[in-house]
Image (cartoon, rainbow, N blue to C red):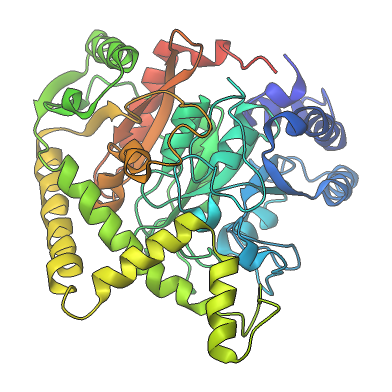
Length: 484
């Protein structure tokens, strides 16, 4: 096993034992990036010289043992602001934007001497489920280069799945961490809304966006969450809670847990091999002493419809600031300021972003607000209450993450509705603001990863991590590796 194939906790142990230095660790990742990234196109910006300098400093000052993420190389989704380092949100509109401040999560990782290797690709402004909507490149799934990695955080998922980073941060608005984690065979966590600060995140839909993690296993996920969770006075939606150690209950087993299974999930077009993985997981939980119960959630179709109305409405509002006046892209040829505004937005935004802005503007327009946006917000309340009823019956909920494994690049680009259906199992979680984790289970007959999702109540991270850790041990997915 190579150095850069190790988990965070394995790497920290090896560093402590002196098996290699931080500089050697970073050099291993850099060599691997230079070999693998031309095949998968995950990175938009590489900060490799900066990473080498940071590693040398850590070694010279013997900072390796100061915290669990010191010296650990990671990748950052390119909609998370980094002071003095270009941040584009994979959009032509921000092709030259250099933020004057850092995102809170980046500050926290910096304070722990984590080493950022670069910024990774995504769907433009986090709008998409395949990372095909980037203005700069299409990222490929390392398990099959002809398939998508999922999205919008496809670059983050690929960086971890192909061992180009020990972990990565992404963002999840309707499944944008969990779905690519599922398709790329890594662990992806979307925390409770407000548990991790959104300060410095380039907004898509502010009431749904949440920064989260990609990791090689569940224990790493808990370690990263320890680092990035916490109150931030700069974010008005940040939860002010006592600090927790999410590794404390990780290995407590599942004998005390009740696992909920949705009665109607098979009706959502679930691939047969995904169904088989679900059956295997249910049997495993029973054998581990967990209680398994069926619960009812009737609002898949309503959740998807409500999500796209709310998300597009908020996108319409958030993206109004990109007008060519203050920063970012500006059209070259225009006659007056209205023409400049029109041409800048027409040329600067990609087709998916323009589609969502138009949908959102329509939903918020006079005469349609009550029929669409207000109704969607009422459905949101119904879904929140439905989850409360579900978690009265069980501790965590087990579902597929994605109904299918990775699809071919280009397969759904001309059918937006089919693309949106990729988020069937993930969207309701964002609407309710609750946490969920995707873990890799098995490979399908094409050798593509199948992910399963464990959902918890508000601030139920400890329980979903506990349930995920036990199931991860059963599947032992890390014995599989993409053939790059």
